[in-house]
Image (tube, rainbow, N blue to C red; front, side, top):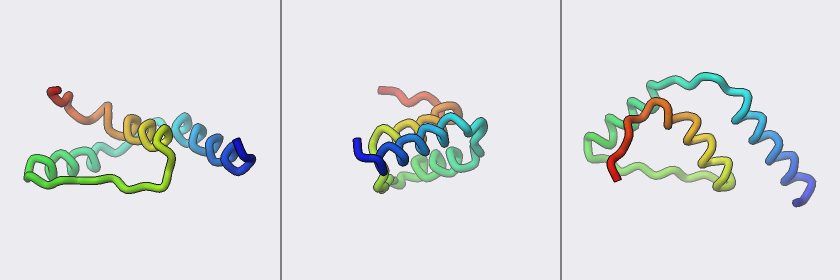
Amino acid sequence: MRPLARVVAAEHRLLIEAVERYDAETATALIDQRDAGKKLMLITNSDWAYTRDVMAWAFDHVLPERPE
């Protein structure tokens, strides 16, 4: 891994580990949009592992279970 990539990865890990709470209003807004038939897409230039972890941290505890 290149030195800059190591720094970015370390910063991402610190962010994920440091945050203790998240405002559920964002999750509620996303649910409202979905219930209204809207389609949403996340566009990011972050790597998949970081994005997946941040999104899981931010929303998994406030979103209802989705049927498969």
